[in-house]
Amino acid sequence: MSLLTVVRADASFLDALLPLFDSYRRFYVQEDDREGARVFLSERLEREESVIFLALDGSTPVGFTQLYPSFTSLGMRRIWILNDLFVAPESRKRGVGQALLERARQHGRETDAAWLTLTTALDNSTAQSLYEAQGWRRDETFYTYTLSP
Image (cartoon, rainbow, N blue to C red; front, side):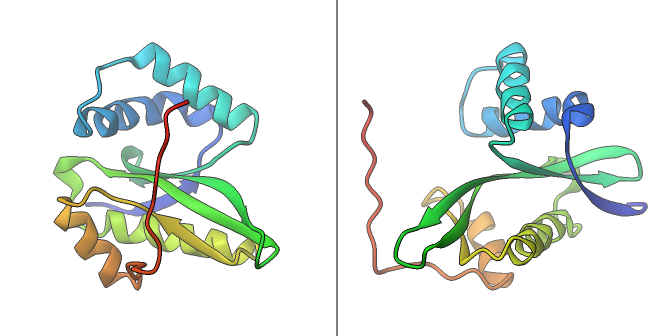
């Protein structure tokens, strides 16, 4: 691995993000949909509805994380939902995930967030180990429920 950098992505990074985003979706057993991904990511970036950090090995995109803003009513502050984290398979175990998580944490500090939160699959022990090694703690005081409208 050459020089690893993490940059905040804007629309000019869209073509670099697309293959990673598509691979991330396929990891979670979604169909390949590059055009849908292009539209989705473009809208998030143009509307400033998410913050995306892109990891580059030299000039090669090797991972990304996407944060969505939310708020805590009790704390009356912003929180960030770390919704997506993906590292290209050939770049895993090389510090890319750690660098992306650290940049997300830094962004939380820069925006005076109360906290960052994430969820991961129950069987994704690799990701769980990474998160816990970086100081993330499993919340065992709340259950998460979902509802399709």
